[in-house]
Length: 250
Image (cartoon, rainbow, N blue to C red; front, side, top):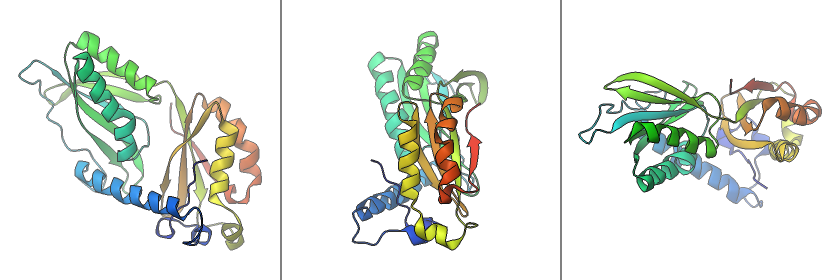
């Protein structure tokens, strides 16, 4: 079972943080390590506090390849972005002789929440490579609302929508509930119970620790199917009181 023990400095649920001798402490260390590493990686891609990806060189290169960027409606950190999309896509393009991946980026809000992620690439034979890329990324789980941008110089001349999965976020209130709720409830229970109810339809794929809320990002086959599956738990578990549920996909 995946565990989301949020470290004290990132969590409004400080009372729930396990002691250093607990069995989940190693996971806490891993979450902290990944969070810090993700921030360091992201800093290489972000040109402002808003998390903008650096301006890519979008001109057609000397080999006649076109410049393209896949913009994902998927709230993944830089490590997961690379493992899920950037690295496999790069390998597949080279193997098929259809181009190469050329790095990725992350767009964040001023609060640090990921808005979207992207992967830049150069493609050969657009009639073959463009449908190959969108199909490949859908097979990797790209959500609806994603798009492949095709460039001519610095101008976007074409956008190809892709994505088949749907998603929504659960924003847990980290400041307004009674103190005893934070003392006596467990954020890991929220994660495990949601995933258990969504089995076969979706799962929590990422999270974000904000200044006043913790967001759980859920992706799967259909929001209309997934939301009712967790509603009874959301209504009954104290830590879920006042939680916001926000659609992430169109």
